Each structure stands twice: as structure tokens, then as C-alpha cells.
Image (cartoon, rainbow, N blue to C red; front, side, top):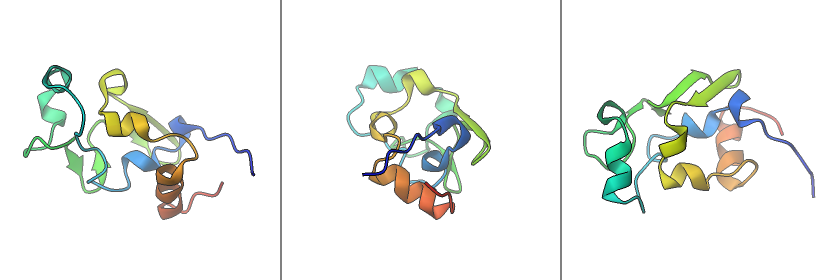
Length: 98
């Protein structure tokens, strides 16, 4: 097994890879009410995206990024872990090496 340290703040690929990823699934109504309305998709099923990029992502993918709602981000975002399958799929789409 290869041990690799992933720096999410210099990547951000998972937040800009697929507009269907930042969706709502197990959040409570109270948790969803905390999200700024301008960052929620019109259908209220997930985060607003511009193309495939989550509207809550700031910075440049592959350079320096941050989630502007990190502390209240959706559960699906919390579930994506550095180096897991979703992470590696997003990184591969951007051509990022391990």
C-alpha cells in the first residue's frame, strides 16, 4: 500500500469535479437552514454549482482552495476523505498525480 499525504487545500478537485456530488442526503432541516441561501441549488437538493464547481469553493483548483461553508458543509462533503475512491476519481479527472 502506498502512503500519500493529500493536501485538500491545495487540491479542491472533489469540490469542482461533478455538480451532482455536493448534494443533500442526511442533513436535518435545521442543518440545511444554516447554509446561505445563495449557495443552495434552486431545486434545494444540493449546493449551487457553476458548471461542475461548487459555489462554496473559493480559490483555484490545484493551487489553493477553501470551502467557504466548511463547518456547515453537507454530509456528502464530509464523507469524501483524502485518498478515498471519490478523491482519487476527482484528482484523476484533473490530471493530478498521487
